[in-house]
Length: 528
Image (tube, rainbow, N blue to C red; front, side, top):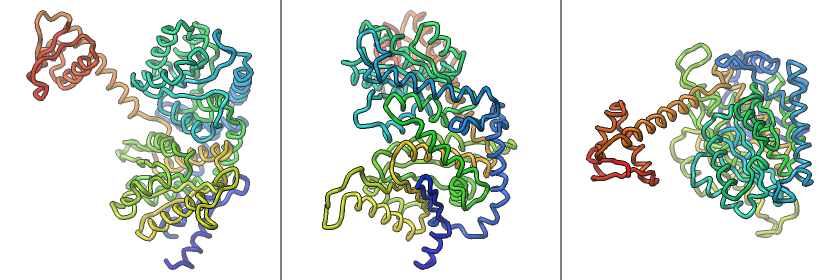
C-alpha cells in the first residue's frame, strides 16, 4: 500500500473521542472490507450480548451470576434499587473513610496519623491497585502503598523491612472475596504475627474488603477491625479495580476516584454504541479477531510509551488471559481459546525484544500506548529543537513503521495525558473489548475454572505434606522415598513426595536428608 492509500486508511479507521481526547488507530491491522463484512453478524450479536449484560442478564452462566462491573461507574444502570444504592453507598463510605485517615481523625494508638498502607491481595485484587498506584499516585502521597501479592515469605519480609520503622502507623488492607483464598489469608496471618512481634494491635490497623458475611467479613467484625468495605458477587476480581478493591487504596493515596469513575463512565457510553467505526472497544475486538484468526493465534504485545504505565501490560495479562483463555465455548465445544499478553514499555523494549518483533517469528500484534503530553512543565532541548519527549515520540513512530514495513500488525491508542480520568477510561475500554471479543468467539469471559483447578491441585499437595510428616513422625529409622510414598498411600505421587521433603529440609523444618542429591531415589529421610 502506497503512502497516499495508507494515509487514507488511517483516516478511514481512526476513532477519536472528543470528550476524553482518546484516539484508537487500527489502520495498521491489515484486514480488508470483506473481512469486516463477514464478521458483521458476530459483531451484531456482540452488541446485543453487551446490552443484555448491562441490563442484568446472567452473563456468567457457569456460576449463574450477573456481570455488573459497568454499574460501578453508573449506578443508574443497575437492575435493582438495592444494587444502585449499595454502589453509591460504597463510594461515599470510601471517600469519608479516606478523609478521616488523612485528617488523623482515624489513627493508630501509637501514632497521630497513618503514613503507609500494606495491601494484601492476589490476582485482580493486586494487579489493578498496583497499576493505578504506579500510574497515578502523587510523588509524595498522604499514605505510601506497598503490596503483598504472593505467599512468598522473602517477599513479605521485604515489604515489612520497608516499613519497619513505621509499622505503628501502617494500615493493612486485606482484599479477599471469600476470605479463604490462600495467598491473602497467609499474608494476613504473617502480618498479624509481625504486628504482635512489635507489641502492636493488628486489629487497630486492619481493614477488610470482602463479600458481606464472608469468612473475612465475620472475622473482621468479630475482632473489631477498623472498617470493612463490600465486594459484590456480580463483580469478578479482574474487573474489580473500580470497586472498593481499587478505589479505597487509590483514595488513601490521594488519587481522585470520582475522576476515575467519570472517565470509565464516559468510555462505557462510547463503547455502548452499536456501530463498529464509532465504538472503540468493538474496533479493538475486531482487530484481535483478525490478527489471531478468531483463535488467538497471535500474542498481544502491549507497549506503553510512558513510565507511569509500566504495569498496564501486567494488568492486562490477567484481564485478557483469564477472561478469554478457555478450553470450552458456551456450547460445550473444545476450542482452546485465548490471547497471550506480554509487554514492558517503550522505548526500553527497543533495546530488548523489538529485534525479534521485527525480524523473528511473526506470532504477535503490537499495541502502542501513546501519551501526548511529555510532562507538566516545559522541557529543555537535548539537541537544537528537540527534547527528550520528542525522542520518545520518534521512537514510537519509528518502531510502528518498522514493524509495519515487515508485515507486523499494530494498534495505537493515544491519550492526552496520564490522569485519573484517562486511566479510568483505559480500564473501561479494555474491559469492554474483552467482553466484545468473548462474544465474538463464544466463550464465557467471566469465569475462571482453570484458576480454581490450580487451587485444588495445590491443596492436594499440602494435604500430602501432612501425610508425609505423619509417616516420618511414626518412623523409627530413616526411610527411602519409596517407603515414605508407600506408607503415605501415595506411590503414584513419589515425585511430589520428594519435592515436599526437599523443601522442608531446605527450610530447616526438622527433616534430615542423606544420600546422593543427584540421585533422588537413593535418598533417605528422617525427622530430627
